[in-house]
Length: 349
Image (tube, rainbow, N blue to C red; front, top):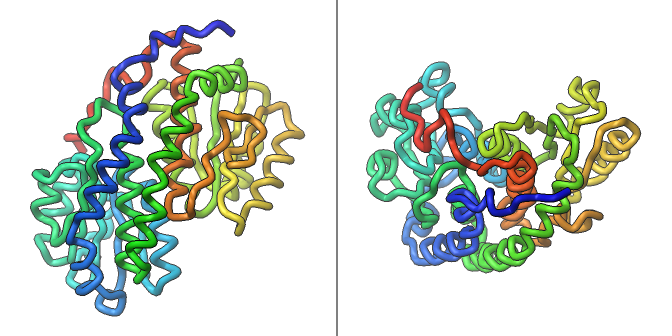
């Protein structure tokens, strides 16, 4: 297939290739931040009845790894989209609740409403890219990323937020911060190495996705962050239908949709459920649909997620899907990540 790679070289493409730089800047910011010592000294699980993890879009989906780590370390996490929190669970915004609010801009309409409702009753930790945003100003503590400005679809802000959330998880869960930062420092080089082969990766995905009309991305545990975020960025970047869900949920109904023209990307994930995901791949292979494994040992080079420490896996798992957005755009002859109707900051609820 002949691909026009020049058409994809827009501002989203530039942001995507700038991710290693954003990760290095964020790592430097996290290393020098005093907020983690403050969190470690003042916030204990037994001080709160619950912790609410909230955000919208990829800021929400990216909370899966943190939720799992906190649950394993004695916290009681509850993931809620901010839109649901403010309308159906506002009673949770009280002094016995710790809120971890993730917002790239720090000023989406739902986040502003949440800040009004809680009015400093709940303890809020903000994770945001903008120090002067409302959520950063109103939060009790703020973890800042340093991804820089971003054109449209979340890419470098997403991976920077994943780095920040992993560092935050270490502070909240009593993990050695030096060890966690050492693990996270490896991410930038891994991302840089993978993206350095973007042209061959785009060509591979163009071949894999030829005649594809719909995409499912599935995974389990921490990999739900990449599966659900990945489907969202495909829709935003390419105006192409994609769904992200758990591998188990995929078997409960959507498996019936497998036919020619459907592609299923399965995140291998960690060892706890890798065999289950491998079994799903084998079952998909018996249908007319196409499928691929996203893991370090994947057969297709473009699908090989860099081998990373567990703390950094959520950062690197999104990479194959980002390349898919470029491949779909090149196949369609359009610039990826160019909004026709959406805006970078959602101001209307």
